[in-house]
Every structure is written in structure tokens, then in C-alpha cells.
Length: 89
Image (cartoon, rainbow, N blue to C red; front, side, top):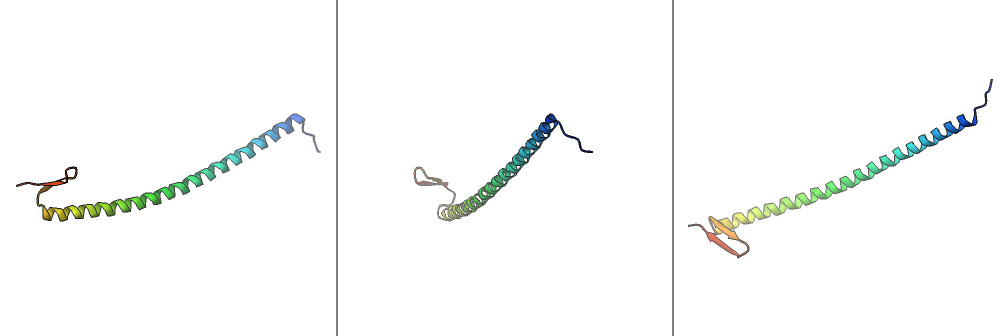
């Protein structure tokens, strides 16, 4: 036996199918956005690692140069603004 659906039933099912399809598209768009943000975060982390490496190298050079100056000016206090070294006696 075959029964005919009412126009109201067909409309309700069609509307629900359309809403489900829209929801699936929204979920897909959300996943793509997460993917894009994850890739961007990865690029940012790569840059941060590069900058941290540069910072570490510069900090090492700075510390080494201060050690060299300490040998020349033992117990000296450097004033970069005045360009002087005050040596404690």
C-alpha cells in the first residue's frame, strides 16, 4: 500500500533536510577555519622559534662581551648614556 504525504509533511521534511544540509556546510566551514588558524599558528610558532634563536644568540654575545669588558675594567659599572665606566676601588 502506498500513501501520499500531505503538502505540510513534505514541506516540513524538505525544510528539515535543508537545515541539515546548511548545518553540515557550517560544520565544514568551521573545520576549514580551524585548519587555516592551525596553519597560521604553526607559521607564527616557526617565526617565534626563529626570533627566540636570534635572541639567545644576541644575549650570548652580549654576555660574552660584558665578560670581556669585565676583564678590562674589573668591578666596573658601565653607563651607556654617558659612555663611561666607573671602576670601584
